[in-house]
Every structure is written in C-alpha cells, then in structure tokens.
Length: 366
Image (cartoon, rainbow, N blue to C red):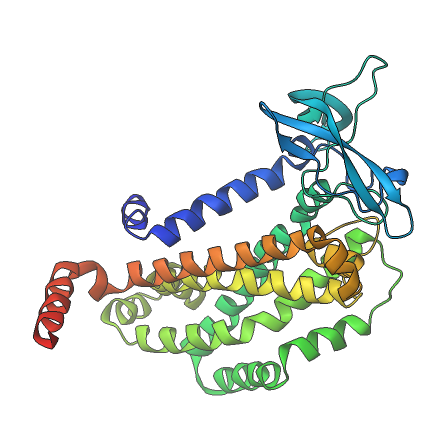
C-alpha cells in the first residue's frame, strides 16, 4: 500500500480523486456535525430560497426577502448580513447514536433575540429544507450502499467463482449457467422486476436492506466468471498440486492459496463496482422504488426536487446532488484505472523500459 500511495502521486487525477473520496466519506461519517441542520428541518416561509453565503469581509449570510410567493422570487437585502460562526451550537444530535452533542461546523450568528437566520450553502428545496444538509445526510445511504453491496457481491463472486474454477465439471457447468441467466437479462430491468415484487410500505431501513441485497444478487456474475477463469489456471500450478498431495482440504486451498493470488484483481473489481452500485441505487430511488421519506439519498433528492425542466430552470441549485454523484463516480473510476495500471506486472516491474520505449517511438515518429 505504501508503494501504491507513492505511485498515486504520479497520477494527478487519481490522487485528487482519492482526496475527494476521503473528504466525502469523512463528511458522511460526521454528517450531523458537517450539516447545519437535520435532513427534515424545514423553514416553511423560505421555499426555494437561493444560496445566501457571501464573501463580504469574510464569509457571511445575507438576508433575502420574498418578492413573489407564487414562483418564489427573492431579492437580497443590501448590506444586511449575519456573521458565520464556526463550531457553533445548534440542533442536538448523537454521535454514532450514543454521545449527545450539539456542535455544528457552521451556523449564522444569532441576533439580539437569539434567533438565527437560516444558512443555505446551496439553496433550499420546495419545503424550505437546506439542500446542503440533505445532501450530506443522503450521502450516508448513497455512499455506504455501494460498499455494502460490493462486499456482498464480491463474497458471492469469490465463493461461486472459486468453486466453479477449482472443481470444474458439473459444479462449473451449473454455476456458469446460473451466472449466464443473470447476465443475459438486462441488469436494470432485473433490478426493477425484483424490487417491484416487494411491498412498497417498507420503512427506510427495510428498503435499504432490500435494495442492497437485490444489487448484490445482480452484480456478482461478471466478477465470478473472471475469478473462475483465473482460479482454473492457477490450480494447475505446482504449489497447488503440492497442497493437494499433502491432503489439505479444498476450501483451505481455495481461500488460503488461490484467492490471495488474485487479490489485485479483487481490489480493482471492488473499486470499479462501487460507483455502479451507487448509480443503481440512485436509479431505483429516482423511479420511486428506492429510499422513501423520511430517509434521504442522492437519488431520492433528484426525484423529489427535479420534477420538471421549468423547475430546474428556475432553481438550478436543485441539481447539486447530481454533481456529487458524478464526482464520486469519476473519482472511483480514476482510482480504479490507477490500481489497474499499478498491479499490471509489466507496468510495475519495467516502468523505465516502457518509458524509454515510448520516447523512442515518439522520436521515430517525428
């Protein structure tokens, strides 16, 4: 891993992506601290309020007044600002559901009566809820579901692909036919079909678990087939034959001697699978088959807020969850590309040779 981080510094896009992902996951774990409000906190008279954080001799919150409550047009009040306090006391919450706390990263400074003007870093939705706070809280589902679904899917792929590649014969034939069935049916349609069979009255926790399991069941076949091919070739190596002659049980040979040989493949597969599962959850939530109120995810935010093109034209900040989603997807892809190149034996062992060869080719072309 130390060598990988050194190599990562030579790949600017991958290095920046790594930093972005670290920041997003830190924000996810400390969502109650980083978000000024809870996901359900509503300011009823401030529907579709634009962002109000400005640079005016420092970061300040500028007040705005409603001009038209039909289409919610606002006008900023000139020279009426509130200072922005960091590490300020606000809504109480519990850290990891255990430790009581009320400190938030930033809030507007209270006035003489102790009232705080709302802080809208990105803007507000139709119910006057802070969009930044909802994005931060929604990251808990959107970001974790990628890891959880990938972990379950990868476990199934290792188990079934390893068994198929090691034993061959009827076991290989049966597992491969099952995987082909899942691969022949378009993934999105299969996900929608499986989700539609379940009750729509499930709470947010049940929906989260069901979506995770469905995504895992749909996502394992491709990786399993790859693992099967690699295991099928590795089992012919001498150290595997020696282990078989020593009478070591087959499961031990698979998980102790074979699987570690394909660790690089599994790492790359994991990095590239996570954004796919995040996008799948977003699609389900956008279609109304995923996370439902009062829970929030990036997909449910897109569904609830971006209802019409006219709505998006008048309140463009409602598109903010989409930019977060695209950023996470690209970041995982850039890191996956870097991992693929790093674990490529020719790239790692002979980097100078290939650099010299490439320079020579460019020189010849000139």
